[in-house]
Amino acid sequence: MSKIITHSLFSEFDINLFKGGKHYRLYDKLGSHIVEVDGETGTYFAVWAPSAKNVSVVGDFNGWNSDEHQLNVRWDASGIWEGFIPKIGKGEKYKYKIQSHNNDIWTEKADPFARLCEHPPKTASIVWSEEYQWKDNDWMGYRKEKNGLDRPYSVYEVHIGSWKRDKSNNVLSYKELAKELVSYVKEMGYTHVEFMPIMEYPYDPSWGYQLTGYFAPTSRFGTPEEFKMLVDAFHQNDIGVILDWVPSHFPEDAHGLGYFDGSHLYEHPDRRRGYHPDWKSLIFNYGRNEVRAFLISNALFWLEQFHADGLRVDAVASMLYLDYSREDGEWEPNMYGNNENLEAMSFIRELNQEVHASFEGAVQTIAEESTAFSGVSRPVEYGGLGFGMKWMMGWMHDTLEYFKKEPIYRRHHQNDLTFSMTYAFTENFMLPFSHDEVVYGKQSLVYRMPGDEWQRFANLRLLFGYMFTHPGTNLMFMGGEFGQTSEWNFQNSLDWHLLQYELHSGVQQFVKDLNLLYKNAPALYEKQFSKEGFEWIDYGDHENSVLTYIRKGHDTKNDLIIACNFTPVVRENYRIGMPKKGKLKEVLNSDDVKYGGTGLINKNIKTSAKEWHGHKKSIEITIPPLGVVIIK
Image (cartoon, rainbow, N blue to C red; front, side):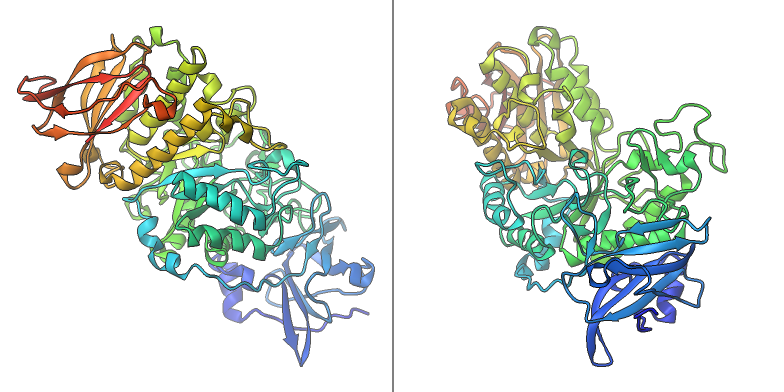
């Protein structure tokens, strides 16, 4: 006889919202919750399994016997099974044993709403209640300004398991990272940190992009409270936290969401729309109301419960197109005969509308989207998808292709750099040099540069200077900031010992100074998504491989003039047209000796009356080899 006591956290209103796909706080209802019933403390369990004919909670407390604690199915056709087990408390391991109406199939599943999971490779869920006192009230009060689209947004992308390890190659815990990582990101001057997925995942080589525990921070590094402590520490140091989030696909692991109740519950039943051939994973059924509620609840969970300041949404392109990575005959057109996934588009719009409504612009959603799909970062009410920003993958590809060329050939390819400005303001673009650019034989950023060692590092400083002065926000993967020489390996620490060498510490100092400049130069952020914030001085000097341009804010006195020399030849007495007369000051020069450069800096810059580049005034400066000069 089952030892379950009938109990429910659901009201009739909750159920109606759930069925309609509009219940966006499902984590308060589904899953395991420590509660008191009739004066007795225990745990309430609730799971969605509409194709089940029997659901039991199994765990150490009943010897994993499915006859002991059989949940009750609700009478309202919601497909929810629930019940209360006395004396079951925090730390108990459990799963759901499910017998399906579909051919009597049996599955044993982790709880989709579990707040904590066993350390992989173990797969059980753990009853948990988080007791944490946040100390980030100040940040939460003014973060809307910090996270605004007209504010500095310089992101340090981190894989927690390989940023730094101890001498025995053990990973650092959330608690250790709250000291070491926070102090480093603050010292470097980044405004935000972005974590590659920290939700529970079974397979280390997936880097976290194949999730099984959507509501649980991975137990590899500590408890949920300790992850909150890490987020809190960033906030107390004025640094925003962005989480990578994966609503595009999930793995087929036996304990995961796939074939959950013996039916295609979370995944689309049509293999052409429910299976991802590249990643050998399952695709959510975006047309199913309860699945949409699950995903939107999950997004809001991290933003609300863990105070995240943004979600970088992974693999958006794979969601938008029915033929993504598929050959002819492997996909079916939509009702209009084209390749857009209308259900996924509708889901994304609903997600972004709800995030915006719930947090009123205090958080951002950022799309990793690599196609020419129109309006990704435009408001839903104007026909867009509603993201705050979109990764500028075309810029990243074209820029790295250009930089890997020997400087003598670059004059033939200047259009690779200038082309981005033809579409730079069609979206709110973030410029990414992410983890994807330093794996699978692509080499590290510095080793993709041509020339001898000095030229490689000069190229890297130039690349970062060009990136920070190009319109848009920016993201840099860990290790790039000090010229990591080897490809990223998720199993090892970054090569921090390289900082003993001048060129490595020099590029690190340059990135630190770029971040400082970005945060203190309104011309670089006030109009970073507007064509009014950018003006070419000259993009046609192919022979010298020089670009000159102006970045503008609201006040013209803050304007910055940027000159980039993409060759190792010094450009002495290089004349640049100026929009007005006056004294100018060099505010940053990548060739400064403190960065590992040769020291060709400019002093006492004054305008002359000589017309140049269509302007009535001009200046003459020295543009150092493979250098960027920023003048105010």
